[in-house]
Image (cartoon, rainbow, N blue to C red; front, side, top):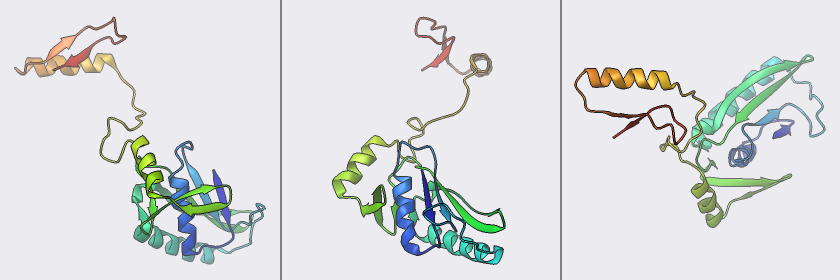
Length: 173
């Protein structure tokens, strides 16, 4: 998802909240310094650095949880400067200034309490890492080596060769 803004005003933070509450997109972007038609506004580097600082400060003050913001950076494109803000849902409802927002097309509105609850139920949360998406790779040989070391130190661990359920070996309590 991509949102284009000619300049930054604090109210655009509502759009950051709405982008952060989109769960079907891995990452969304808000680009400041372009028209809605995708044309460069023609800003200079000084403008971009100043706006980047303002945007970063307002994100720190108003975006909750802050982990929804994956980055704020300045970019030069054909001699015109832009600010790119990357947003990703962190596993929790994203708020701007105490309100959670949702967007449909160009319309942004505050979420109703029942919508917040419905979204919160579908998300893993910030602290339950077992429900959050992981990109790690499982190496059965390393698990087996770890298990053998734990056992060799005198700890009681049961190791199962459970090939019926599709695993080469797992730790069981």
